[in-house]
Structures are given as C-alpha cells and as structure tokens.
Amino acid sequence: MNGSEIVLRLGTALLFSLSGSLLCAGCAQKKSSPPEPPRAQITRVVERDVNIYGEWVATLDGYVNAQIQPQVTGYLIKQDYREGSLVHKNDVLFEIDPRPFQAALDQAKAQLAQAKAQLDNAALNVKRDIPEAEANAIAQSQLEGDTQMQLAAKATVEAARAAVEQAALNLSFTKVRSLISGIAGITQVQVGNLVTPSTVLTGVSQVDPIKTYFPVSGEDYLRIADKIHPETVNLLSSASPIPLQLILSNGSPYAHSGSILFADRQVDQQTGTIRIAGAFSNPGNILRPGQYAKVRAVTQILKNALLVPQRAVSQLQGSAQVAVVGPDNKITIRAVQTGERVDTMWVISSGLVAGDRVVAEGTQKVKDGSTVTPVPFNTLSAGN
Image 1 (spheres, rainbow, N blue to C red):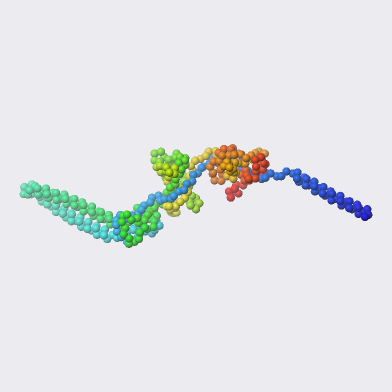
Image 2: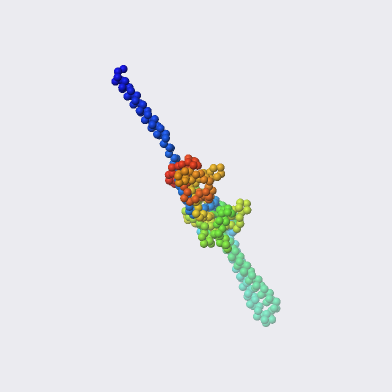
C-alpha cells in the first residue's frame, strides 16, 4: 500500500465519522423537541333564554262526529253519496222505500177529511139547536149533548191533523240526510237491507278543523295552567294562548300550528295525567280521525340558561362532566348538573359560568391537567 492509498482511506473514514456524528446530533435534536399537544375543538358556554318544549302522543279525531241512523224502519233502496267524499249538511245520503209511508200519509189525510166533516155536522147541529132551545122547542139537554159532540169532533180533527203531520214527517225520514258537513265514511249496510232506527248506516266527521287529544302529566299541566281562564277553563280565552305544533307519524312537521281548546275536568288517578284537547286547521282534509301524531308545545321559558353542545358532556358512573379549557390551554375536568335538552344543546344547571371554554369535540382525547391545542368548534360536523 502506497502513501496515496493510505491518505484516501483515512479521508473516507473521516468522512463517514463526520456523517455519523451529524446524524446522531440530528437525532438528539429531534428527540429533545416536545410533542405537539392534541387538537381539541373548543366552544364557549352560551347564556340565553330558551323555550322548553313538552311532547306528547296525540290521537286525531273529528271536530264533530255524527253517526247516521234512520228514523224509520224500511228497506234501503238507494245510496246517494260516494264513500269518502265531502258531503254537506242536509244532503241526502240514503233512501228508504217510501211507498208504505206515502200510503200511511194518504190514509191520515182521509181520516182528517172525515173528522172535519163530522165537525162541520156537529157545528150545524149546535147552530140549529140554539134557537130551538131558547124557544123551549127542544130540551136543554139536547143542546148540551150536541155541544159536547162538537167539542169531541174538534178534538178528533186535531188528532187527525197531528196524524197527518206525523205521517208526512215519517215520509220525509225515508230520505236519510247528513246532520253535518264533513267527510262521509264507508257505508255499513247494502241496498236491499231492512234497516231500523238502531241501524248505523255510516258516519260523517267534520275534519276542518280537526281535533287532537293528548294526555299531559300533572307537572306539565301546572306549567300551562296559568293560561287557563279561571271562569271558563278554556285555554283559548287566554290573552296569550299556547300554540301547538304537530309532528306527523312520518316525522315531518305539520305546516299549520294549532291551539288548545280545553282541558278535561279531572286528572286520571291511575296515570296521573289530564286529557287536553287541541284543534288544527286542516285545509284539503289531509288529516283524518284515528291518526296518531305527536304534539309539541312550550311548557316553560328558562331565563339566562347556560348552554353547551351535547357532545361536550360525558357521562361517567351516573354523573355528568365537562372538560374546561383554562387560559393556559390546560384541561380541568369539572362535574356539572345537566337540565333540559334543547335541540343539539344541553342546559347546564350548575358547574359552569357564561363564557367558559369547554371541549366540544375530542373529549375522549383529553385528561385532567393535560394541555390541548384549541381549534374552533365545527358546528356543521356536529350537526351531522
């Protein structure tokens, strides 16, 4: 090995040594830099007035429901309405065979004519007897007898006239009419059936407006009881009636708001609830009796309530806690008392003050005393 090769090998060794030293220095420098604190979405505790809603299962019913029944006995010969259609008051829905009732009317009219003829004859007898009795040509008892016959004939005429009116009324009852305006239901009988006054032919319901019945707890009732007029127990008579919202069975909100009509006279002792009746406008008759829905109404207003996102509250062994971020971005786990839920927010009764910064997203990544890198809370992702 000559001198030049020795120099070359020493230079190469020195170069590798320097590179290794630099790499080690870089590793040491990288290990010495502290890790970045975890990112956490932060929001502030909001203070504002909030409405607290009650929600109850409701049953829809017609504002007025009428069972259509005949008032005479006979054979049904015609159905004059289309099932499920809108009918008006006094519209003819069914027809009963009128022939027996027409015959009864004709007979009653003939009996009335006979009674009138007898009355006229009795009147002539009395008119003839008066001067003869005054002249002592006939006995006074004969005049008195003829006078009594005239009074009896008058009574017979009145009875016959009443019979004519009754027969005419029965004949009119062969046309079965609707008692109210509303939606007519499916017929319960067929043409050709013998019907009686106890037979239910169909039903008609007034559905615009439509009623709702829903039970509320005694506590909720007391919250809205100040809206009840003390004399009429009518919630509509209040200066500020309680508006109702209707949530249909498919989860969609009904377009029209409603109002409370009245509260039942007593509380159900078995359930502790009281029945409330409400009313909603129903253009187009979309809502029908028998449907189920949910009714929402404001039961109280919380003044200066403290609100945080529901995601900011974690439950641990039956207690609620929130991660509060201090001025130095250090975490303090604080126990809180929760109240009502309002949309995606939670009312905090105690444990926080307005303006406190809390971790709204990423609470599982933080611990008491740890430091975080705060970023604004993404409400859009929270809503999703």
